[in-house]
Length: 217
Image (cartoon, rainbow, N blue to C red; front, side, top):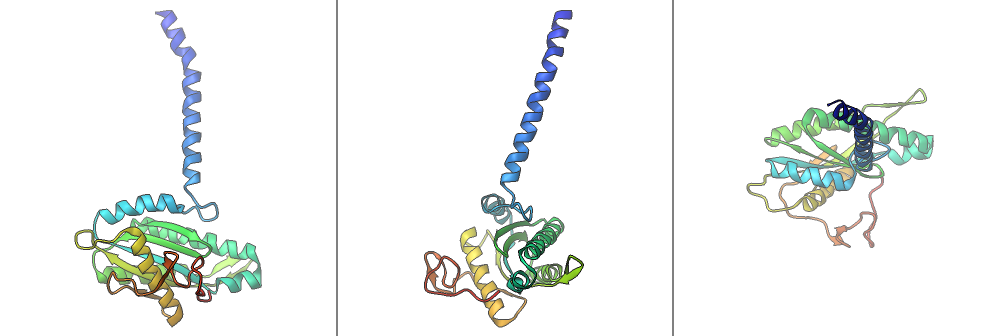
């Protein structure tokens, strides 16, 4: 009996070591799924979670692009720009926690989100809340820096709509681009038919699509 107890006791440090190792491994895996500047999900992790949200019921997909961000970088430097991006990421994470949403930093000053919505009124209210959160000044070295946001959104119902996340992101991106050009805070897609041309499987005018130019941030 004493030998069994001794063997069990001897095994405790090894078990504890494996537990710590497993915990560290999980932390590393989770860190790899997060954008280092904002802490938001990376594209692959977002795709995995967003697909589940869309399958669960009526939802909306948002694409968010910051306005006047280039001016912040040019005037105050890239460190200030990083501070604005990090603050935007925190605000989007807070918004996501309240709205049970999934958010990703697509790159640069562009973000996307997927959240459940019940009706058109719910979508409009969410867009207003999202815009207000992003446009709050960010304090950098004692100076308030303010950026705006252009947001495109598209509603989705898995019971009636037959499009995937990639198409929904494209549709929301089109609306974001239209909002940016028109000066609107946000625009929502009226249907699930793409309106813009496609180059290299991307909206004409986006980076990576030759033959077009992106709207000024």
